[in-house]
Image (cartoon, rainbow over all chains, first blue to last red; front, side, top):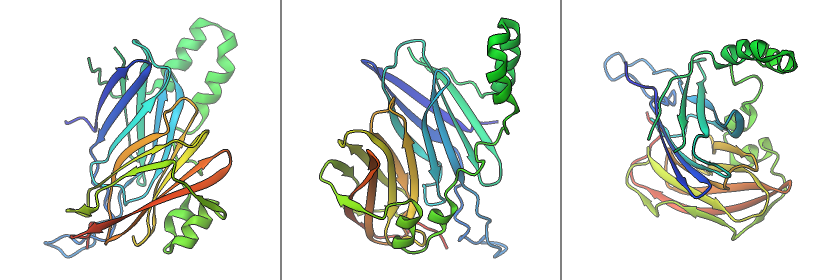
Length: 104
Length: 163
């Protein structure tokens, strides 16, 4: 089964540039199934948390207006090789995913 | 270079490890382990995200008094070919930037995203948003307890909210 997320971390001095790609439909609840005509239920990532060596750095709240397969890029200060960065998300249906990377 | 490892139950592993390491850590780790696994708790600003007009969205995030700022660098296309994927990049030069808010004035619900940054983060966020129609993209920054705003018109040829 494919990973629910991909992460790329690049250390630039003591700043870790983190790019994350999350695989998620981010359904707005406005689309209709072209075959059945049924409305496709609202289904979107609501919370995203990024941590650096276990400390929360980024705490985000999203709406269904974040694009499908969300991409987010953020930068952590005071980073060094060996540090761990984790990114976790949870959606409105209680599904969640998490990824961890080690800076080098 | 990249290590990808889906997290299992890290809280549980930490707890068991803490038990092995010694009792000083047990209380905090136990509290962490017993806390509900869901990130959500009450921390999703439903009132603000459900707001259908800009004024209500701003009220929902507590932005009653907002000052224009030229210290918020917003990079967004002047014309978005696909309203479903509009790249937005924000760099705030306002000291003590703590939160970045992204809104699209004419979206069915204007508030798109809220990013709370601790002091350990650069005041920078780049992401992609959906826009239903041509509109101002509005970036609010909360810094030092005050709100600041910068906007940019983005023209959308094909709306991206679906339907």
